Length: 291
Image (cartoon, rainbow, N blue to C red; front, side):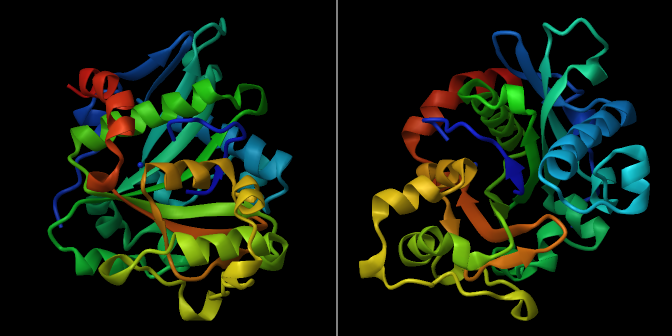
């Protein structure tokens, strides 16, 4: 769930591969004002989303890019071909659709992950162990989310959530999961926020997910009594706060991603645990667009 979303939203979730771009036909999944959200329809729109990701992750935030990515100015990897790409368009821009894309979220369903040899997050966290513990549930990995600076508002975030909720309903997803990031590759710089997560938001029992041993860093950097809840919450990245609000839990340990200069945690969100007030908030539009 590596992400760049600045504003908080107050309401911030082995079968043959069947791509959502075919099943959902690139149809509209949500609309707020001039902004619309739907899945990428073709390779051109996916490449446009990769260029948006490059602008945010590499040009704005300084993530390392391989030589091909730098030449083409695209953030891309092998998972893009098996993922579905949720896109936000600003339809007020008088330009082709590929130039209207202002935000994106990448979604990897369990069946596609199996064909790709695993989930993106598995390099950092023991995601497959979680999936094996719940063989009857459908998992969805979320990641690579970003919004261009001028569109980082409550409206854009809510629209992405609306699209995700329509997608989750369409595919009857049971669990959403993936990495979420703190900016900076020094966990101690986020000691209070990470400690808050360790003490108050940990996944338990069959839902716990640990960082892979070779990359594990403790999040428990301060004793509970030393954590100021208000300042810890204020220091959390907006997307992590959003996931916590709807009922998500955090795995065991954090991981340093040197390529992206981030400190990553693992987020697990059972769809059935999403608070009813959030389901009611997104439900009407999601059911309408997912139908």
